[in-house]
Amino acid sequence: MKFNTKTIHGGQHEIDPAYGSVMPPIYQTSTYSQTTPGGHKGHQYARSSNPTRSALEASLAALEDGNHAFAFGSGLAAIDAVLKLLKAGDEVIATNDLYGGTYRLFTQIFEKFGVKFHFVGMQHADKVASYINENTKLIWVETPTNPMLNIIDIKGIAAVAKANKVLLGVDNTFATPYLQQPLALGADIVMHSATKYLGGHSDVIMGALVVKDQELADRLYFIRNSSGAVPGPQDCFLVLRGIKTLHLRVQRHCENGRAVAEFLRSHPKIDKVYWPGFEDHPNHQVAKAQMKDFGGMMSFSTVDDSYQGAVNVVEKLKIFTLAESLGGVESLAGHPASMTHGSIPKAEREKTGIKDSLIRLSVGIEDAEDLIADLKQALA
Ligand code: P1T
Image (cartoon, rainbow, N blue to C red; front, side, top):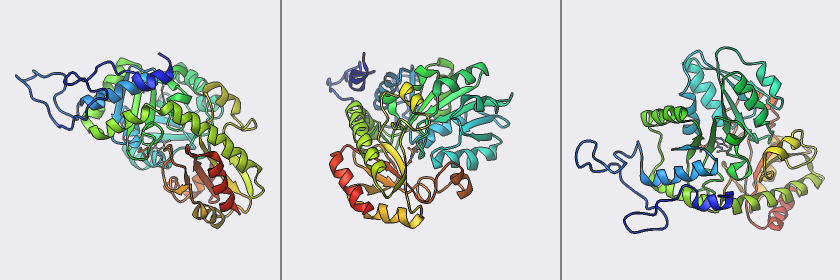
């Protein structure tokens, strides 16, 4: 089955046995009757499993070419479950340019339990290898990175991980499985904030993990069932519905992303535009090799390079909404230093280029002309 067919049919073999409903029903129930202890029809308690969630998970596994998928109550809950594979004394090598909440989870929750993190610029796989020792258990990659749109060579890092028997997890939130499939490039775990492009309509908070390996799947199932960060059935239904148009939406996000990035780059008040589709982006060739297109996420700074300058622009936007999050049909603008990445200390933020003047855009699927006109008036 090819990708566009998979978004609609992937994993969806079982038509509802009760009435043949084409979409899986929302099983809004916490528990299931048993005829005798253990005598049930595949589901016993909804923390362990729920038919609506199972339908979504089958779709997610198909999209990422994995064998097992797990939905969580948020993207961070999914990452939290991966970290619970580790124990005190273990070490993690993580991308240095990460979503601020991921950085906060690593440094303010898991460091306390004795897990050690190395935050590394991963544009060169060799650099990652130099941080590996006998305690290294996980490499955590985000690509494209949030918010600097750096690109990391998944295949290159996977070779380092395999050679050293270290797990490789990839946060595929920005790319989506339409643009990039980390498991096929050698990752062990792919993670999503399904809140973003998978849901696609800014109406759900959810996370997901997809893996191929049965033993890893068993461990993640155990962690989720033991810790309990599961999403509700209504949210699973909404994400499954969102996925059915993923390919169409992401195609338009990419087209509009290109138009907006090129407009910004040609504007006299703009200093830098960070978007992997530009031929002179430092890892454009890697992006071209591992992604189908370059997406609708980008960041930029203005020539006046000030906090107030950035605030003036985002406050004047009319079609772009100033808000956290990304990946919905509507265009959003954000100020990473004070919003999504505010939990990273200023000195650390600035090392990766998250200046106070940086603005991040999630380019939606409106008409590109309207989006460009909005940016033009805000910059004027
Ligand atoms: O918000 P949640 O569903 O828990 O997902 C966390 C997360 C994980 N990984 C990446 C790459 C993310 O971008 C996020 C959430 N990001 C935002 C809310 C944001 O505006 O960047």
